Image (cartoon, rainbow over all chains, first blue to last red; front, side, top):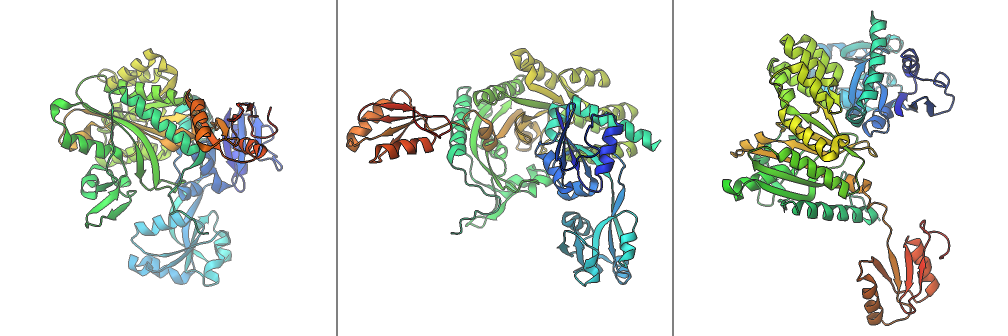
Amino acid sequence: MLTIALPTGRVFTDAAEMISLAGLPCDGLASPGRKLVIEAGDFRYILAKPSDVPLYVSYGTADLAFVGGDVLLESAMPVVELLDTGAGRCSVVVAGPRSQAERFRGHASELMGLKVATKYPRIADGHFSARGAQVDIIHLHGSIELAPKLGLSDCILDIVQTGSTLRANSLEVLEHVCDVSLRLVASRKSTALRWKEVRSVMNKISSLVKEKRS
Amino acid sequence: MMNRLPRGCVNVGGELASAMEECRRIFIAFFESWGYSPFLPSGLQLLESAWDKLPSQVRSRLVALTTPYGEPCCLRGDITLAAVAYLASHYAPEERPLRICYSDRVYMKSAPPRTSIESFQIGAELLGWEGEGADAEMLSLLLRVLDALGLERTTIALGDSTFLQRALASAESSAAESLADALRRGSLPDYFAVLEKGNIPDFYRTILSAIPRLRGDISVLAEAEKLWGRGAPLSALKTTAATLESQGYGNRISIDLSLARDPGYYSGPLFEVYSWESGRSLGGGGRYDRLLSSCGLMGQAMGFALDLEQAAGLSRFRARRSQVMAWAGGLSPDEALRRAADLSSDGTCIEMNWNVDRNTSLQAAEKRGCRSWVDLASGTAYTLPPDGKGGAS
């Protein structure tokens, strides 16, 4: 039996749809209710909080998983990233009030001491360190857009899909950090010991992704 | 009471410590019986000795400090380096190959999700052999010792860094570096993105495209050989895999030609050990001839290390119960110890109990999960229930 972890929340529908369209057994996955473990055919699906998904995979509790690229980057956990499904595509950006834009256009030294509120402290640290800018990272767990408004930070680092939340809070994109989308990942152990089964799932999802792109 | 440990450190006691000690003992005794000498390396290594031999991603994980004599050092992050230095400074060429085995702590910052900085390693190294056989010897002994520890449900994923390096040699150095890095990180989308852009001859592009899926049973080697044609750099791996298969270990090995391991000094067959009962690798190793030559030594070097704590946790010694509780039963300490010594002379594991009250002693034996309880005064023995609950029978 192959165990696949699925993130609850925003990308769950995309992942469940992909499983269904790829022809994997998925009875009960469309409306799981309060169930957190669903078995269908030779598959067991674990419904987990998105930020916990890489952990399930890196410890080998799940053989495979769908996980957002942002979560994967932030977790920095040792998993094998098999496929970019292209679903749920969005960007990680630095955003802030227009008054901050000038600092981002100038020399990196202008950014020294910049206060950045984010749910992604590791990505933020990597991004600003690569630019040689020492910034003050404020780790928040939600409603990031509030931080600049209330003077807690100068800007935010967050994911953006349409930009409407930013606009609603009078923020604009100051810097693009990276693109993210839903990824198919596997545990290192499973790619070593159960490659045939892992590959079969990967091929099915890959064909589906190619079909959608063409 | 504040009894926190420094972050990343660990105290191990109780059943796990006992299992670790048993595994350590069996491991060392097994390798000694195959001519491997125990090795106890220094706890500190000079930074200048370790720095240039380790890749940057490993250097950044070392725990650096300065000795009271002012020498910049790191806590021993890797026993292999110490073993090679020991060989270089203590053994003449005619005394090689050197076979050593060890069980000791190593200190290195872990990759997420773990936060540990210290771990327990058991391992073995075969240094300075010039001919065939070292790879097969090491892997065969590894499988045998895993069995001796009760880790029969383990599989060795075998790769070959030469195969990968020869294929990568066709790419420009920056692309080759990015491809190797993507494999180490386990990112296939990044790997294929670099491959697509890189200026690589078609022959090698085909091989490099296939590498991430060249995993599975031993037939993968034939597939890889067919792809490469004559001169495929797989002979060492093929010999090793064939030897293990002929020894009956065919179902305990899997091939993974995309395998890349930290610390990155490998230069031939390399491997990772996985247990079906655990998600993380138990350890691994491989050939690291280049590390030997960087110390001015010729010949092959082959070794491996396992995480002792993980191995013991999965071993057959993990859930062992205390064997027999021996109640003094009002006897003088001298007489009680004499009778207990008789009882343990056949190898029975006993634990003394000096309680005055018989029932209290019996209850203590049950609570502690003893297999049985013996009244040393009368010689009466009771078998206790296996779950440590309920009355004696």
